[in-house]
Image 1 (cartoon, rainbow, N blue to C red):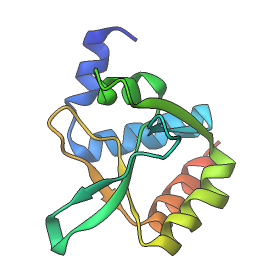
Image 2: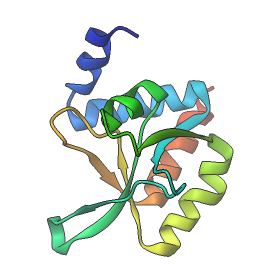
Image 3: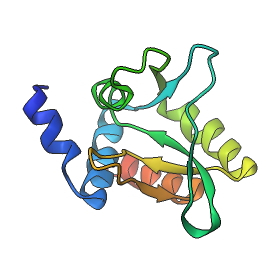
Length: 128
């Protein structure tokens, strides 16, 4: 994917990036996160609605790398979709962590409950 194509997708609205995420993850069967040098996943905090933590996720390594930018402590990690659906999302729900789907170039992000993302991903998979 060229830098122009990458930027064009990052400039989409939150809702359009969410749909792009579902489509690409449905095809590729993997989700991307960022981890630090201690092997801990990147967790961000939002001050909206009284504050909450969320796990940012991306549909491909290119977008995760673009978000990490020049931060040498962050590296992309692939999670196979079955593992994400069956282990990660239930664990996030149990820990009270939401999911930030595909942060954009303007730092906007689609925040969703793990159970809602699970349902949307399963619906996407059912299309194939």
